[in-house]
Image 1 (cartoon, rainbow, N blue to C red):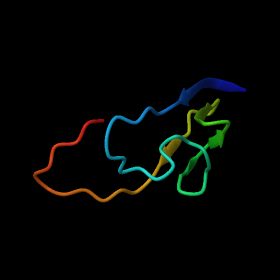
Image 2: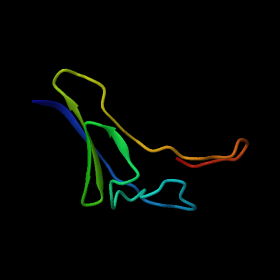
Image 3: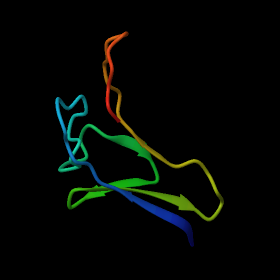
Image 4: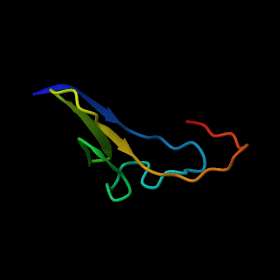
Length: 68
């Protein structure tokens, strides 16, 4: 039984630091209780409230402004 399901989507507005930020493939994403299909990243929280996430490591430059 799922307590909550959250779907994420992405729209680019500049230089993209994220690989596959449009969720077109799952290759560069990792996580727990996550899936990627049809351009949507989905993180599902199980009934036992264990941690769930979707993540990707990025490189950034200190002192530079970024828009999230």
